Image (cartoon, rainbow, N blue to C red; front, side):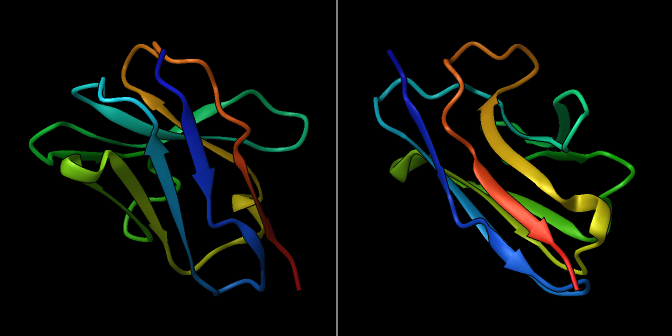
Length: 114
């Protein structure tokens, strides 16, 4: 059973940056991974995805501001978030993509507030 542990969230002002990390605790590591977020009162949504080879895709709302990357040897997936906006607030999770095959981790809370 793969467990996913997210970290790196926090409180940041609009325009600020954060780097999120996700580590998979077992050797099974999906070919494609994604970062998802759940804003207060909203459903969880995909914000970025990355294939095993590094091809990326982004939701329109974060394109040009967020960068997803991965280190397969370390079983890590990262999300660099720049120019953060109030609407980026939420709990961020990683999981496989497009099908979320693994149990959801606890997520990491990102709060963008002035």
